[in-house]
Length: 241
Image (tube, rainbow, N blue to C red; front, side, top):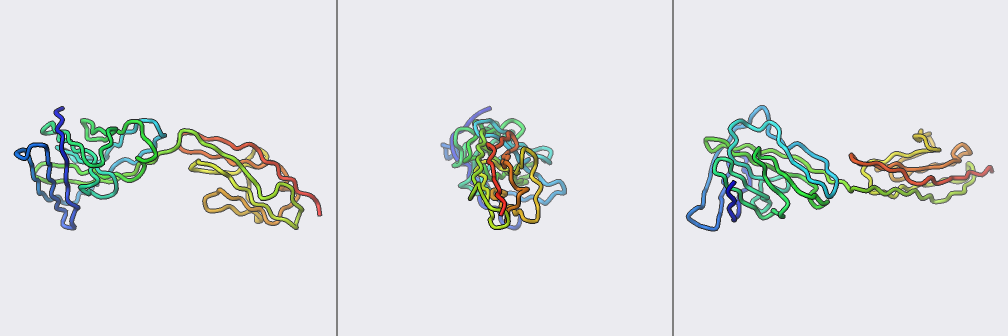
């Protein structure tokens, strides 16, 4: 593959499905301007959204790639903005050009997919790809990259660990960097009662009022698509009135 230093510029996509791409290499004589139209297709080009743990490599693949794809441009974000271009690869001409958002970790592979090496949290977000076809047509696709921490921490704290039945309430808080949370009671999945309320993000468990049967140990289990962990048990003591 032949590499060329320079920039890839792409105007924002107007409603008429027409766009204009300017490839600006070091030598002005090699400037190429492409203006083209494309019609909507039934099988929409898309980026396959992916999950990856920090520090690992990830490959953003495409589905419904139109036959005869010649060139590819990848962008950071959900729009084909010239200032958000990562890399341009011309399969037909063997040209590889880095854009303004290139960080040194990205590479377009021969099938047009985007490889990112040693991903960090900063790479999470939306991505856009533009695929060039014959007759100066193009298709555009979108997708999402989710980046998760390689280690999950979880800890439970309570507003009070010794409370009086019927008189008091208690709020349990799960401190974690996990993406998904569930609560455990005495080592088993907590079955919520009408006196229990979970916050929308499941980080807070409120019991109001407390009953004797609420005495026991509470844990939060935090997870992401790659790993799960449980907090140390926290004991709640409910005294009789």
